[in-house]
Length: 173
Image 1 (spheres, rainbow, N blue to C red):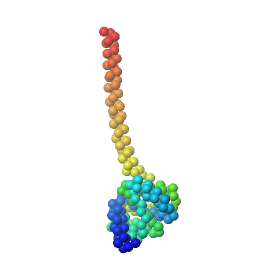
Image 2: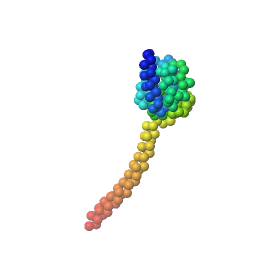
Image 3: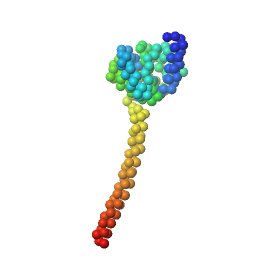
Image 4: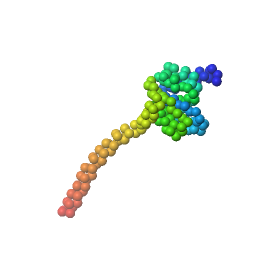
């Protein structure tokens, strides 16, 4: 790789990591191309990314970002996963790691807070931002639908009473 290519890789990775909410450091030794492609696909669907990068270049890219503290984890066959949603990347990586023992979570960072492998697993157990939004919408809609049902019930009862009264009037008259 030429020096200009390396500088471009470092610059691109630095820009991406500076805007990420979470970064997960993994060891991927033994993953086949098909397996790593599947992991990339899952992360893309969740709004994240997965990239194998040379450790020296990754260390340079981490400089000046909140993730500088991850540098000691960069040894051996390392790949980074990141996402804007603080739960998306950890969730996908941890699930994939359970299915495929070749992918090992080394640790990560949430903003400037460093996480060990267990903390990344705990983060993965949290509901995603989309799941939380769906729950909130469901909570907001449930009382509204109940309110509509309650408001419609008296009107229906009133209509039945008036109809019955009308029938009595016709029969008496």
